[in-house]
Image: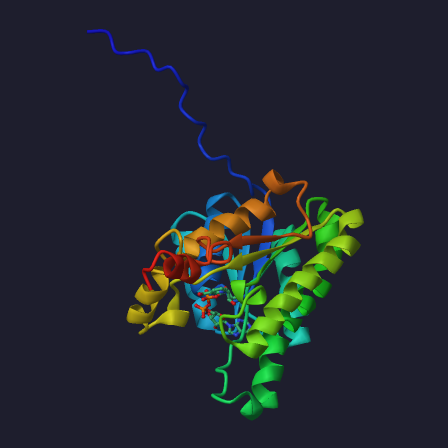
Length: 274
Ligand SMILES: NC(=O)c1ccc[n+]([C@@H]2O[C@H](COP(=O)([O-])OP(=O)(O)OC[C@H]3O[C@@H](n4cnc5c(N)ncnc54)[C@H](O)[C@@H]3O)[C@@H](O)[C@H]2O)c1
């Protein structure tokens, strides 16, 4: 019997969108940062994996190399201007330039039960790591990204920047990142650098370890019926960092299973489902 002639050609293999690109990513020792480092390396990038925790950064870089990718690691605390500048210099020295910066580090202190008991320490630390960290990294990286001719910054925000999910300081910092993304896009666009923000909903990472029951309850609120994976976020970062997003800058891409768009609680109440 003659085999049927296929009517549609097979889709082309995913192109290696980051061949010859150099990437610096913060807080990539685990979670979304590690998944993003793996994704970009799998698409051809040379990645400088940085993290506050040197060992974690080394582990991610080693795993990337084991998978056949190119990666180096360096300890970097995004609260430390000198460390951030050293990381950028290191990436440029080792890879010969810098094409992509992924700002992923954050701090999220616990809210006090009463707002009037909130401490300056939590407020200042959350803002310093979550909002000022990306500022420091972008400031150090921008001249090199501009020199690359295809520079891109992708910062990890959060749905907390757009709606109340708790976390006063963390949420304020994430909202601030949307503004920084816009003002920096305005400044960097004429220099050939695009700047975008990804706003994830709940993502199962070590940040949620030991809270499986809570994640299950939260999953039920998501229109798509599950919480996110680090790989869901990595795919969006890769898109925004790539030339597929060549005419996208200053924007926030929600990668949130629909939680910000759909008021699940309201719909259930309307339908009498509590
Ligand atoms: N997991 C979620 O549900 C979720 C939801 C929305 C947004 N996000 C955002 O995604 C990003 C990554 O979150 P995650 O859950 O993958 O993180 P995670 O908690 O699993 O890992 C965080 C990493 O950051 C490193 N780190 C901490 N402080 C640092 C500093 N000062 N400098 C450099 N590195 C530092 C830690 O060593 C750790 O390796 C964050 O920006 C977070 O706000 C996460």
